Length: 420
Image 1 (cartoon, rainbow, N blue to C red):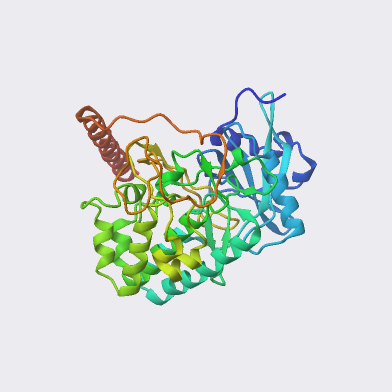
Image 2 (cartoon, rainbow, N blue to C red; image 1 turned 60 degrees about the vertical axis):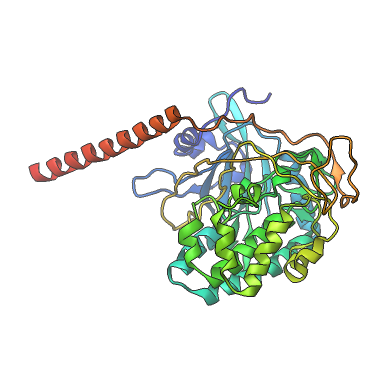
């Protein structure tokens, strides 16, 4: 019987402090959970799961415990089978354990996989941009282009390429983590998920079209970001929010709006970087199934999708996905941080022929869209209202309350020290 309610990350932390009781799978026998200085299990909490670094024998592992109902068993089993037959250096093994942890009256699944060493792409760029190491960032861009080639050849659609799901190893090579959005041949197309909105084409969030090239646009966003940062590391300080590299979903939706500063800043850079930025802008104006590969977009620029069906960007809002894996929260590293959600706009597609004005509803597009596969609509969240003055007041009050709390705690610490 499926569990009626799922444990939170805090529930799992409490449970795994006594693994002899809560760990019920023989596959996890002998697992040692990493503890922080206070003897509490280290955990990285994401939007749908909690990830615990564990040691089994001499090997560091990641144990992913779900905090929301999940239907990932078929996905992970298909991925494991695929990697056994066609290994890829970009993916590590991921083992689905149907009944791994007991909590309350329920038995809950887990995913066990090797802990990937290194830093997330975001953490690596934090360091490189702070040091203004343009050569290191340029090397990341070259490596990413080769990584995108390897991903296309792997037969796997990752589904959520973003700063928190890409690990930069000690050797400088990339590895991919977070396989909750993975899609492979043989899986239902309805299982293909939309990734982090700050990396997605505007049409991906409100479209009933899924495509096997779903990784190409996000992959190109990452490539352009790395090239831009190698030309001007200060862009990180200007545009990085913690939930992106330098682009946001608003930049893709508002690609032709004068107030999107990122585009004007990129035009000031060298000719090659400016041309890549213009290619990304143009890509936002065509349908999301129009792109052949990251490399072809990088080399042929707009010519790689010439003649593609046009896409009309609309309005609306949507929440981001959270990061899945901590930057350095593996065995022998400091304790983790939490993942925050961030509101971003979404949009509705309307194809028109290239080079023509917006058509009337009865008009047919002259251009034929690139091949795509159509299935059930991607589930979407309801539109959220624009922030009102009342919302702003509530946020201001929350900030003030937080600051007052910090002041009170500081005074308490000072009094405690002075009295000792």
